[in-house]
Length: 255
Image (cartoon, rainbow, N blue to C red; front, side):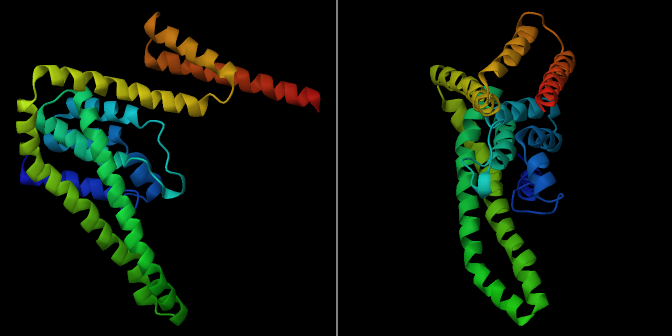
């Protein structure tokens, strides 16, 4: 990995973080650019391998597809896993399944960075309140917008850069030293992890046992009928409309 590539990937890992406003705030930067699927596209463009970047990003994204951050609490940092994990996978030439195994510990590292960022900022609140009470607008602005982003840049950009620029060659050497039997085990485990992410998502969505029927229809359409995704999406929309209209009719009749 070149110096410029490491800088660009690390910069996007910062810009698309949950704590930064530069790409449109949390609603766009984190929930769009921060997702591993989009991260895979961006990293693929930077590293000149868009196809594998998207494949790896999508595979990592499947693991975290049901992940939520209630109140800012996160079990794993999907942004760090997406950008750094995809870049490391591309630089080492591993499969998408092994990339997922790489992304899991990276997501935990990102969570530690987030907790450290939140802890540091908690000490700045009292000084910010003091500036607000005294009407010191300039200092208040710096404490709310300037200093937190300086801290975010240091805590986000530097770890990502160090892992990518200095760790890529180390990771590549380690991959070459891993025996084939262990590589096969890691590949199998990495292939199972996205299924775990889908299971978490289904558990959240299937609030009623009757909804499992829609999943079964979609499964049959994909595996047995080999229908295109767009066709399956249209069928899903039609079934959702039928269910919604029927429920609306029942509620109107009860009234």
